[in-house]
Length: 64
View 1: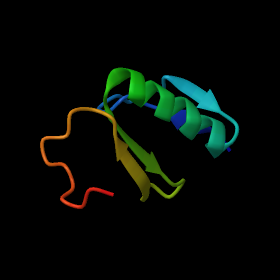
View 2: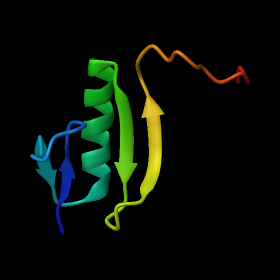
View 3: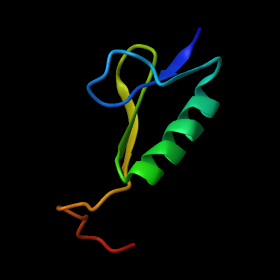
């Protein structure tokens, strides 16, 4: 089973991985560099997590 990293709106994968963890690590690093949002999906297509690394126009109210 392959895990693909894709840029939002693209049908083609940027890179392929054999397991989920290295795919998420690569995607997270790429999102940080691009100041973009990271959306992680499970194999069934459901979203399992997301992080934003850009300038968030609606930051959370709770300042942890």
